[in-house]
Image (tube, rainbow, N blue to C red; front, side, top):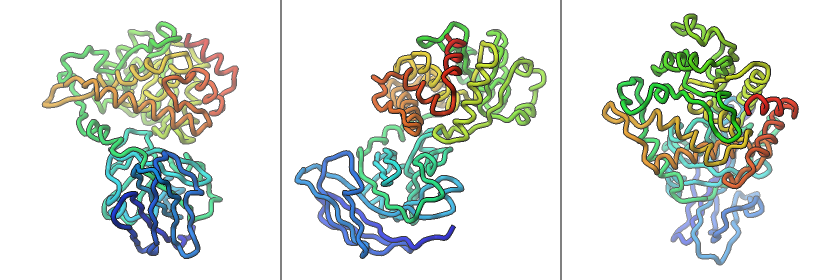
Length: 418
C-alpha cells in the first residue's frame, strides 16, 4: 500500500498566550486559532480542514481550559499488519501541551471515539487496554491496543481511504497518573518463600468462583498447572486434583507447546479434558473472541468442575472469568473483588517479601477490569458504560450472542454453571 502525502499538525490551548504550529517531514505548517469550550464530547463538525491546510475550531464563551489537536492518520504498513494507527504529530511537540498520565479523547470521524491514557511505554497499561503511545523523538503518535489490533477495534478496514482526519482532546488532565505510579510499584516473586502470609492455594492463584449465581464447585481459576515459568504449576495441578477438576480451558498455549513442558506427562492435568485456545489478551479482537467462544463451547460439551487458566491466571483468565460471572448474575462489586484477588495474590513484593496492596492500589486495579469489559462489550454494540448500575447479566448475554453463540448454547452454559 502506497504512502500518501501527509499534512497538517496543529495544537490549540485555550487561554494560552500564544499559538503553536509544528511540522515534520510528512506535514506542512498549519494556521491555528483558539478554542474555548468545556464540553467533554466533540464532533467532526467542530473541525474544518480547508484546502490550504488551515484549521478552524469552534469557540465558546466558557472559561474552562481545553487542549485539542487535529491531525491525520497515516497510511502505513503498521495499520493492517499490527493494527497500530500512526497519527501525524511530532511526539515532542505533542508533549508541550499534553503529559504522560493524561486521559484524552481520540475521535476518528466515521469510525469511533475512544478515551485513552497518554503513555510512554507498552508496559504502562495492562494487557488488553487501549492507549496513546507517545515516544519522545518520534515524528508520530500511535493509537494502540496492547496485544490487540486497534484498526479492527474501531472498524477500520482495508477499503479505508487515507489520510484520515483524527481529533485529540484533553479528557482528564492527569487522569491516569495514579495508575502509572501504581504500575511502577507492582512486582512479583516466583518463590513461595516471598509470600509467608499466603496459603498455598493463594500462591497458586487457585480458587473456586463463588459469585452470585455460580454453583458450588462448578468453576475454578488458577495460574497454569503445567507451565513452570512462574513457579506455581505443581501447586495448581495438585489443587486441581483435590478439587476433582474434569475440564481445563487453557488460554495460553497450543497443545504441542503445553505438552513440551517438563513434567506434563506426569501431571494430573494431562489426564483430563483440555481445550487449548492459544490466544493473546486482545479482548476486543477476533482471535481472542473466536478462542473464547471455542472455550465456552468446550465447556458446554464436557462435564464440570471446570478450570480456566492462562499463565498467571490474571489477564486472559481475569477477563474470561469476569464475563462468566456477569452472565451468571454477579454484581459489579463481586466481579471487581474477584479480579483484584489475583493481584493481591501476586503483588507487591519488595525486598523479597510481599507487602499487602493498599486500598488505593486495589481500587486502581479494580478499575482495569471495568475498562476491559466496557471496551470489549462496546465493540460488540453493548453499552455497559454505567458499569455499577448496568444489568450485567443481560448485557453479557447480548455480548455472547454477538460473538456467535446461540441462545440455546448460552442457556446450556448457564445450566452447567448454576
